[in-house]
Image (cartoon, rainbow, N blue to C red; front, side, top):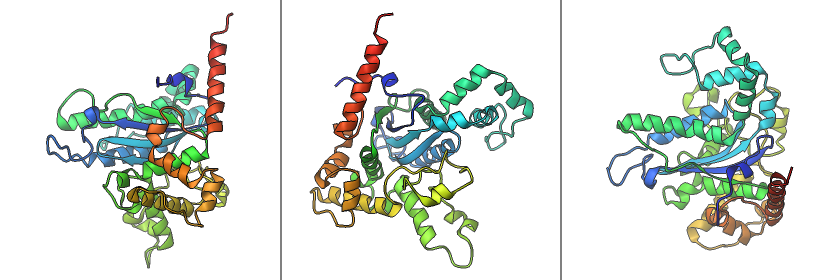
Length: 349
């Protein structure tokens, strides 16, 4: 099946959700223990996690889930052009400076910009317009994620050339069922690869970060606030909240500092998502459908998906959906829209 052109998938003026994947060159374990050289590059997984966290606080792009593996990484992303549109020119300039600083501190972080340096950026209307578009663009996000990691790894190895296999692969996620299935697929990657037995033991995944924060909220350290200890600091507050209509998120009046917004992504609570994740992971390990518990049934009903369809969807996510992922109605809708756009682009005059 031919790959769909990206300009037919990406829409600069629409809120969209994507599953992006990038692999190391020749699928070697350049972020883990490399079998050929015997060297351990596992510390590079933290580079990817830190870069994702940094970009989540800069871009009008939101991270729903992620998994950094030894030879590839997965990211589920939601673009938010509506947020970038609401930013002032000064805000755009400051964020751009933070991303591409002309001056740096000793620790290589962006130095505080001078007023005239920000003014130099805002004085170009066309430049500001393009930067605003880039801040909610998937390709620019992936460029800013992957390029620094490649340069840092090449410098560490004292080599030149490609670190990533090719341009990232992308799948649009068209509805809540596809988003939930893809997030579970990504969070369970270490379990499926026999690198971890449970989601909470799956290092460098969004599931582990969310479980850590949930545990800290349920069991705060005695005698002192959790925020006073670096070990108890939030690991997931830069990720998109799970619950789509969370009263706590809606009540938050302050703009989040480490992510673009407080908007959730699924019609379920964090606890329900973790239950669904655990149940799905158990089916993978037993390699058979099994019986879904009564507590989880409403979740799948809300996603308009049967037990068998859910397991088939998550197990074969990458094989079944070479381009978009979603329910049949969602796939038909986007196909019709793309066909209409092609006809419009080729119409005479």
